[in-house]
Image 1 (cartoon, rainbow, N blue to C red):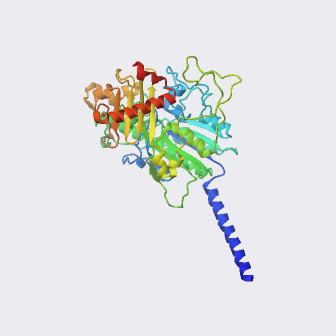
Image 2 (cartoon, rainbow, N blue to C red):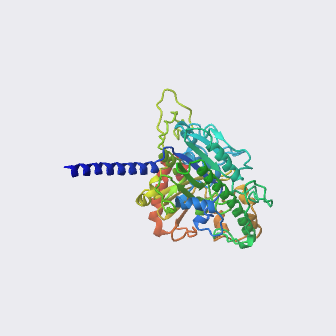
Image 3 (cartoon, helix red, strand yellow):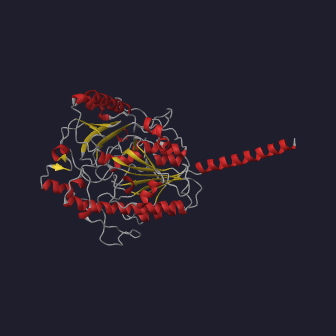
Length: 506
């Protein structure tokens, strides 16, 4: 009897220890406070060490990747700075929000007033919000952050100072969780030429310049291997390294303030490199981008890297739903609107009186499961869409695309027009060299084919990663083309794309 008693006591104590251990583990996985940092690079592709680029010097971004999940098939939905950022901050395709292109200067594109945005939804959920660096959204009231900390950041190119500003803000006495939107201008081109670099080593206080030699640079297959290109590529990589130093300072700031283990960190870019052949196109160099996600709730062991990759298809329209999902935030209902006359999207219409509010919905989806569940990554994320219409207001070339499995279909809606150029890309030494020498082949694609495009382009991304062999007119692929065209039409209709009419009218 006595033996049974002590055996029972032992079992109770053991159960308590197991329960305490389990609860401790649960607490480690689920931090009491859930903060978010979104890092957006400006005009960056896979030019990072963690993405296999051996000439890049990006130790801090590589370290972040080593502690998180690196996506290998992540895409912006439009390869244009301002329009892409509107997608990031809404979870909606820009053709549905009116943010068709650049917000600044004469372009004047902006999001409808009725659209719900991530900073506003986070504020309403009790978060304090801060934007540091490049903003490039409109109107401010629709994308309102509680505070902006941009003192001394030198056109958003001193990313170390940006991170010091971030640390100061994070450390402020405030019990609310935080959402930080940190956006460097690097490595965007600085005007027509250059990348904001300076021959002076102390031009950006806190930043130690890293120089690259043009004659040692290896350019990617989509660019011509010419001296002018290699020189620009070297300057581009210097700007990337400057960005990396700021990311390192920012990660250290999270550790110094005690928030390394309760903060979701996302690193990505708005669009691909600022060279013809990438930025403003829906080809992979312009749209297939880095996405690194460090989720502190994933189990980790001291000294053990849990870095992994996922080939789940993800798009920037998924960013807002993913963040809200991780934070457990259900957005407040959207204000009701009166539909426009003659049908069409109700987005941006005037608020309606005495009408019911509508739940907030997104065109994107949360990819949280893809971070830990390989099956979900393979089965749940097999299709994404792209929508590009403008860059600058003078650069009209609407394109829609779908990636399904290994194939990409591009619908060049205004295919009878020559492909237009962003002003900085046109004036770049790279393109000016191509014009002056009448370069017949630009990278691996003929210059003529780059400028004059057919109505449809179909590529097998596995067999033809450079997207050179257009299969759209191949009879053997007629069934696939029809299937993907059907998917495009259905998606355009679902997202109320005004360019849906071009299937019939032009």
